[in-house]
Amino acid sequence: MKAAKFDYTKTNDVAEALSVLTAEDGDSKVLAGSQSLGPMMNLRLARPDRLIDIRALDALKAVTQAPDHLFVGALVTHAAIEDGILPDVTRGMIQHVAAGIAYRAVRNRGTIGGSLVHADPAGDWPAALRALGAQIVIDGPAGTREAAIDTFQLGAFTVALEEDEIVRGVRVPALSGSARWGYHKICRKPGEFAESIGAYVCDPESGIARLVLAATEDAPLQLDTAAAAIAQNDGAKFDLDAARMALTETGETFDPFKLRMHAVALHRAVAQAYGA
Amino acid sequence: MSDETKTITLTVNGESVTKLVDARTHLVDFLRGELGLTGSHLGCEHGICGACSVRLDGDVVRGCLMLAIQADGASIETVEGLTASGEVADLQENFVERDALQCGFCTPGMLITAAELLREAAPKTREEIREFLSGNYCRCTGYHAIVDAVETTLTQRLEKSS
Ligand SMILES: Cc1cc2nc3c(=O)[nH]c(=O)nc-3n(C[C@H](O)[C@H](O)[C@H](O)COP(=O)(O)OP(=O)(O)OC[C@H]3O[C@@H](n4cnc5c(N)ncnc54)[C@H](O)[C@@H]3O)c2cc1C
Ligand code: FES
Ligand code: FES
Image (cartoon, rainbow over all chains, first blue to last red):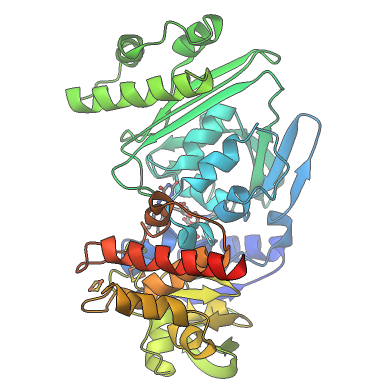
């Protein structure tokens, strides 16, 4: 199908983008890579009155390194991350994740910020950045604020972002040399949205251990108790039964097939982290 | 500044084009409807099938997920351009040789996507070729012959350059 009619605005000024979002009536939407909004408009699941093309906003393309994190601008594409153009602060994790998103033609346009805001339950960035404990940097009429990723995604396709705010970028914590990570995506075809995602990050130096399950019907699920135990045992006791147990202990209910698949995703992510 | 229509100027297959477009018109509708370049096909129009693949400033993209208005100032190459320049001549020959097309609907997208892989001129396994082409659907061939054609072209190019 074809998109319904809309107005189109392009700007290279953040303040102007924000003022278009706030000032005018009707339903305005930010357009980044168009790899999620595009399909939704073509299917008429989304019918915004106005699109604000933000691809010319240089502030959202910045990549800057600090001692404890890497700031990645919202407009940085999956392809740029896949190609390893960014400084590697995650011991290769974000590069690995980027390469597994969709297909090269989609990665060439799709952005990390768009993925976070779109908040598909099976999205790769919401899962991977949750495991890394990233911070989201947000611009709004009142200035810039930061939000922890743990509270940013409220549910499937829902994030804690006001209508007059845009995501400027994301702070990705730098992992130490002794950190480990694992990321396992189960899908029937390379590049497809996942049926299940297991993500695990542990950094003994900062004491961080995070285990995340995604591609449920909701926001990614964080399994803190299991993560702490895994880190303590260097992954040794985290077999499939333990993964299933950890899932049951979250209080969520899964059908037997999904439970099995999610347990496999978590187990493989942890096994990858410990080189098993 | 906020418009339902806009005049855009872009380069298509090396030629400069200026046209008035509706904001809602995606790139492939523009290429097909306004410029008569019907090599880029539309299958799903939501990013899944890859029939609409075109090159934007040198990179392969989904032509159905990009607005024509966004191509203002950009350089677009379609399968017509890649054919005229001879960049994919060997690949096209191998497609014919290996019967890598039947109805031909997916072929332009396959060629443009494979061209991106071939450009690296690095050895690839069949598995890697399959993975790279996994975003392009073919409803006829069963893919085997397409992978053959791409693999043969890659081997020939690597032999030539060594
Ligand atoms: C065939 C196909 C397969 C895919 N497979 C996968 C996959 O396996 N894994 C995966 O994770 N993703 C997948 N995707 C989605 C892809 O990663 C998208 O790029 C991503 O979800 C959205 O990024 P975008 O830049 O394209 O955003 P857009 O589509 O432009 O925007 C998405 C939403 O975010 C909003 N938005 C965008 N940027 C900002 C910003 N800076 N501030 C505020 N709001 C903003 C928009 O208003 C819109 O609501 C797939 C897409 C396609 C077409
Ligand atoms: S028509 Fe664009 S991907 Fe199918
Ligand atoms: S040859 Fe018919 S779809 Fe590929």
